[in-house]
Image 1: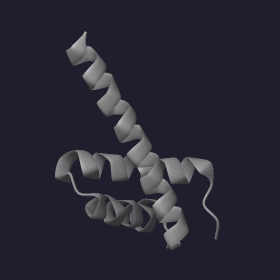
Image 2: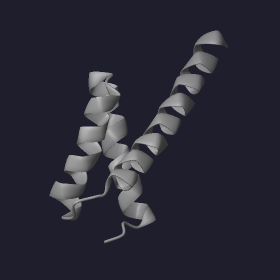
Image 3: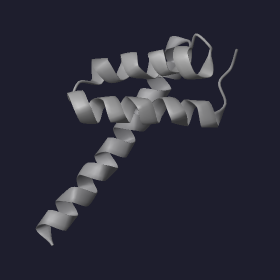
Length: 73
């Protein structure tokens, strides 16, 4: 079963939140996988999980850049 964009983004949010709390991308991978199992009800393939984590990493980089700009301003 393929996951749609909304589901992948929801997994990315779970990964982002996990990384924010644990500062561990491996925990974020587990969080994205568990989110798909628990909330979406599907077993995601590794590609979907890694895509969600890549999106989460991009969001994290954006958030970090915003904080740096605010602190530097």
